[in-house]
Length: 96
Image (cartoon, rainbow, N blue to C red; front, side, top):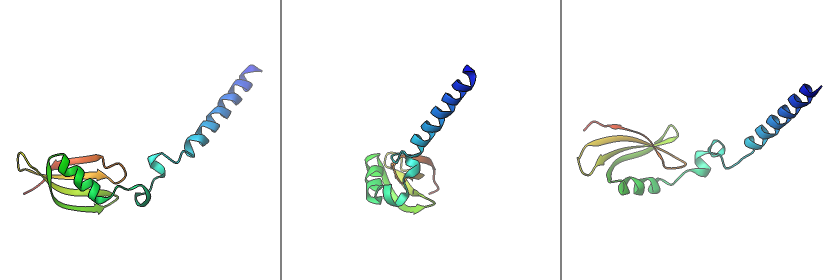
């Protein structure tokens, strides 16, 4: 008799936790690029602060794509940035 009560309590807890997590509007899953996106000029300033010169910049496939140049080495880099947080998602050597 105790097992069904324990299982019911666990199921109730799991269901209520799932609903609470699903309703949390501050999670990135609920942000759309239009409402939570950083401005392009903020990303451009961040690139300059990191020590890169900006070549080209565009919003494509839900990310900011940039061709940047390392000021110290002069080498080109292709980079992708998150539209909401501005976090660098990917960087790879670019062609000159």
